[in-house]
Image (cartoon, rainbow, N blue to C red; front, side):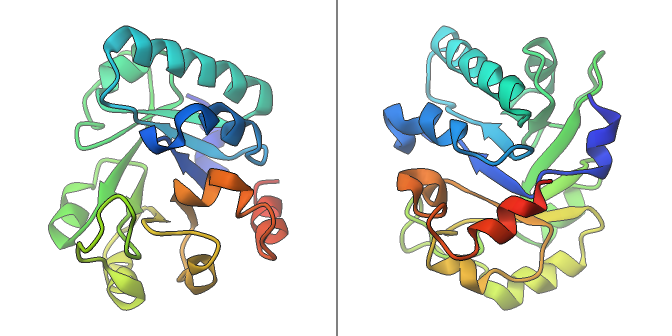
Amino acid sequence: MNDKLKNTWPRLWLMTDERFGDGLLEAIKKLPQGSGIVFRHYRLPFKIRKNLFQKIQRIAKKQKLVLFLAGSARLAAAWKADGVHGRFSSQRTARPLLRSQAVHNRRDSIMCRKVDFVFLSPLFSTRSHPGKPFLGRVKFLQLKRSIRQKVFALGGINAKTIRALPACDGFSGIDIWQDDQFRHHRLWSFWANQQR
């Protein structure tokens, strides 16, 4: 774990998802330097998942990106991830890791005391959970006030909704990194410059 990272968190995060398909590696290559990636792809068989993680790890190292593994802290340490994301991210490991967790409600906000930062979600309606309730700006900000760690917005963030992003430490997304929709947005230079 890089101690310097604790003071210079990535403000832009990409959550990997099967929806990226073959475009995942290209999307990662286009991230601004200093951005973060949470590697999920839970459904892949172990060997294929590890192989894809290692490909991303090589890109991340070359482009100075931060790479978290979603799931087991021990596996994240074994795979030499920069951090671990998930409900069990507070597991002890021999190798120090940065730790993050998703927070969806008040109960989660109480349970996340041992992590370094949180992804508060879903901020907006999402394609992955159509028709499901989402926080919206008001509930997002209310929950954010109860969390002492850095808070990154997640859920339904795309080129249209980013204009309504409430005050937070940064954001993560899936759709926003597909098809270069954010790179052509007027807020791209603002957020990309936050990484430097």
